[in-house]
Length: 427
Image 1 (tube, rainbow, N blue to C red):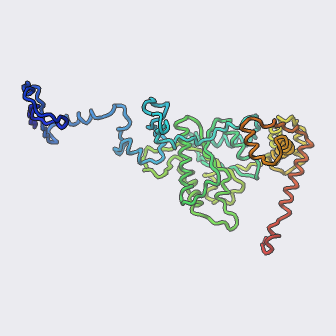
Image 2: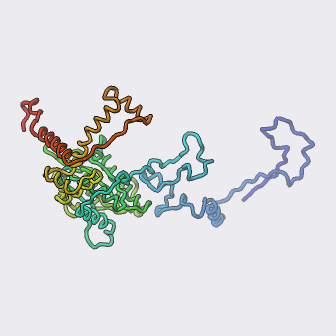
Image 3: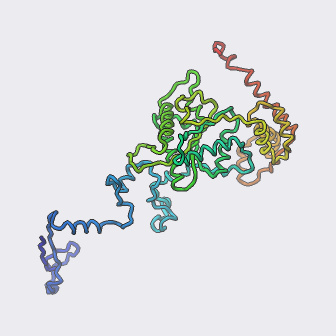
């Protein structure tokens, strides 16, 4: 039911005009009078009209803002309920929308999801050169990654975690990085230092967030990704009388749960049936997996790989390392045989030690050690640093550097000064 009135303009008092009413403007056609209508409708008068009115209020037929999920929740509700939504792209960023709307003050970005756009993956652009990848190592890592990506096509139980373990300094991490670069994989890399926190539950949540981020790399960028945890036994291992913390237990439980349910990963948001995460392979490195909770390293959850490079692997890796210095493969064999039972990083330290004399000569050319800090930075800024000439590498120089490193190793093992300072300390 509707009731309408037509009111002459001279009866309407304007709050903006202080002048009194002038009768000469009172003669107006009634059709020009403003009309005030009161409309009262009951809820069941015309349901079809009400539905049409609601339909007209939609922003667009293709708008995702008003789309409903299976529970009737719209986009904004889901956006607020999910703290880790990686598909948020509703911010105003310069270059994405018109500059008129981004402005040129207080920064040009008004992006509510800036933290989610940070580069979390590793691309290994710094690895320049021709490095040697051990065939056995390559086969194991490639097989593990591919097997996890096609696990839904295989009628077998595929372990989610690959545990690469072995002696210190044998190139476990470096070899995996070379393989990732060769395969075009963009992994998310964590260290053992991130497996502990002053807040309980934080490292476990971090692992789940990194896992979901790797899944988003696969889904949004179309690139293969994986989660890597380096030196995991340093963070989760139990040595002697070390204490097991709550975060250690949560991290172990998180990794076990990921291995058992690799496509259902929660970081605190409301569970939905459509929230399926891509299966992401996990690679962990360490030195001694006997210190880790046994159910985590059991078969079915973790595929173990013991990496001990052969003599041929060591020679090929070191030869590629010294190739730019003009050292032949026969000379590399001589150096390797002179220092047996040494890790791969030992031969990298040899090359670094041979640079010491050249660096000291360069310091003297720069003016000596007195007030070197200020002069070095100033000369670097002005572009007046003296030219550094790398040393000429020879087998004799490498052997001399090797003997120095061996002597330092023996001094550490033989002179245990802690016993000298603490007479009552037991072995």
